[in-house]
Image (cartoon, rainbow, N blue to C red; front, side):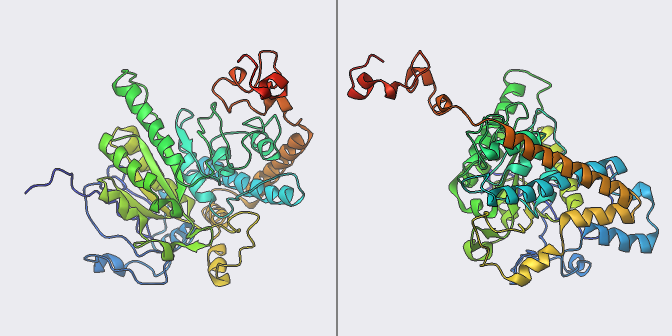
Length: 436
């Protein structure tokens, strides 16, 4: 009996020695079924169906930074500047965004321990290649849906550092007027549809945003509506029901969405390898008829190349893609986490593959930028972050009257009276005799 489902669509991970690709050849063939590389973070050998031994022969046992790969290839074939993965302008833009994310999060740690921030604060250090590699390819109209680790996603999408820092300080000048805090960044202007405190809850929102784009284009005949949505989430989320439901819906309706798994190998204190029957998350894409890909999330250039094709594919109306970016957070789950569960050797291994350092090395070795140019960017970003802190510190706290705003659909119809005062302060209201 023939199946009603399309053939499995699996994206082959990039070879580790890839530096260029022909413009007439797509980065991946969604109709080609092949095997994946072994899971980089695993200490166990995974069973793969029909391994391609010839291809495996050319793979190194560990992940190699792009800069090392290009250096090796340059020695062999005298690679010209025209074969580099990025232009100077692109490289400087990527570096500036990654430095902004790193410096901002480092400052957040300082401010948290000084008592300027409250609640849980989850930092993004180490994962910058994923945010920069994907979000910097978007248009302003494209949407981003984040998690509780959302500060850097907001910055990459264009939300000013002042607005993000003020939100973390709980001030009225924050992007949510101080009501969202660390885990709930939102900006209508920048189409950042929120950070979400509970894992998985942002994926349905992202799927809905992608449906909106498709509906506007096909039902409302808005031909120029080619907007794409990126849904970011972690490895722990991939065992939750919303993830599977939304993959199914997105594939069924061919929605313009890219599901980006930031697999940092740990769900709070639970190792990904202990919590998932098959740790290769990318395989879940083909199960729903969409391409799936595992990419080195510590390498911004590899992430960017994969993201470019996945976003273009969605924009062309060819449907969703699942991208698993293996990355690593350099700090604990949150600033309240002493980070005692992870093996120090594991942390040292990934710290040696710092994505910011790798990009800097690549640019200098390939004469895309000088040390002085990159230092100038770092200095400018330090000033931006310092300014954001001063601005947030001097900004006013929200007035008490703002407490119930954005809680009820019509705040003046329930929590706040027509005179702007709280109804609960009216004795008749608490006695149940007030007219509402």
